[in-house]
Amino acid sequence: MSEHAPARRPAAEVDTEVEPSIGQLITSAQKDLSSLVKQEIALLKSEVKVSVRLGGLSIALFAAAGFVALLAVILLSFFFVYLVHLTGLGLVWSYGIVVLVYLLVAGLLGFVGYKRITKVRPPERSIHQAQETKDTLLRKK
Image (cartoon, rainbow, N blue to C red; front, side, top):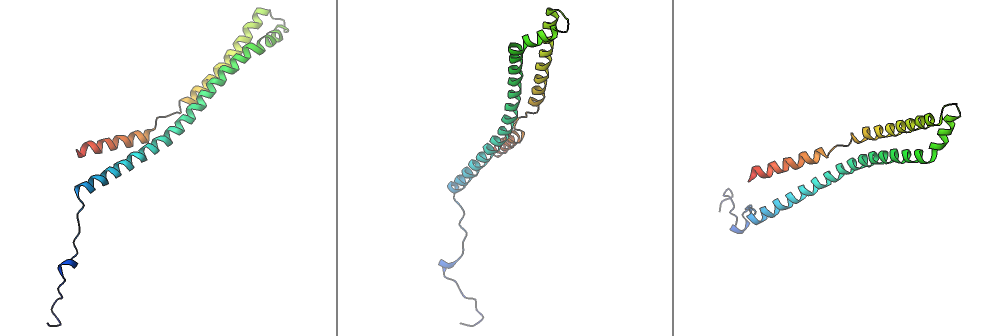
């Protein structure tokens, strides 16, 4: 043999890329899809947690408004009525003024609760991501 002749490799040493089988491709796709669904669920959980926190605060404000209104009517009504009555107004007018004040307080608390609950939003990123996944899956079939 001459020094310039290329060396031959035995057949066993030839590099060949093995293409994955259809079963392996399907398994890989299932794992990817499972991972994607898990990530979307995690995103949904995080967004819902924020919405629930804001919604919970709004509900607490509504409950506080009701509780304050109830306590005010039961525990302080007579005190304020007689306090107003000491100014010289009749007892009936005193009751009317006290009721109006309590309704104003309850209305104010309800308004603040309403403003807070309007800040609660649906999980928009999760909805958008799920729609994209659905569109992608439907397009490939």
